[in-house]
Length: 294
Image (cartoon, rainbow, N blue to C red; front, side, top):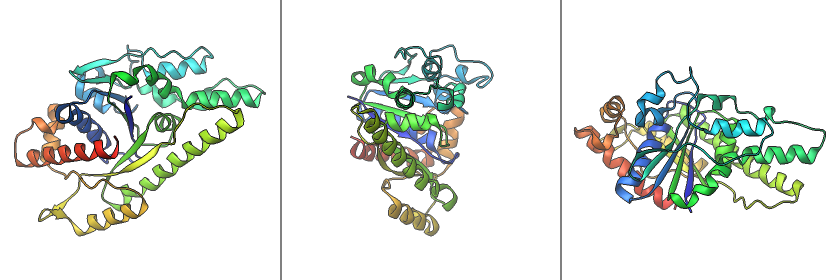
């Protein structure tokens, strides 16, 4: 059974996609895991662009040719049976991808067919939040990890990601503006867990759902002085630790990641002292990740 981990954040520009991308590759390279990445970032499709630049050209202007998560939600809105077929692209040995689709931005429970029957409406709501999980069910034994990159906002797509995930992590910059959104994310995970409990109770059904766990905030683009976090960032790290779990390992800012992004390769493949430092930080983070999200 695959461990499903959602990478979620309320704020953009905090290194969420960078973390998901490098941890996926780290799991394959250094931990010899089979990994599926779901790119559910419907604004940028950053991970899809890293692996398949041609798919991201004109992103947002033309529909993807593949069968994406968007089509699964569309089946619900059309009142047709939800099928689990979906396009999976091979990136490299041990690593596959379900590519991004900008039309995921249109996903909303408001589009579900409604009736005067409260039970039927609740069944539809439960099916909507279970959409991604349903697609993943037949894939569970093919992978060790499924990592889901999300768009930075609270939405019905995000709720489906939370439902599908065993764990959620929240990459964050160690500043007050960025990290304040972690409390919102923790609250939304609690909301999904509570809503599912309520729906199961009202429908008198058991769907095997286990509450999603917030595994921790993950420091990205951190700044150091003399090999330690700067005082302001250490203070923010301490504040995050009070609000919820925080990964011990973090990744510092620097040219290594920028050069890697420009070359569309992981920082593991970039030369230079800064890249070597960030590469080791991601390797350490990968080791901690498999311990926290087994």
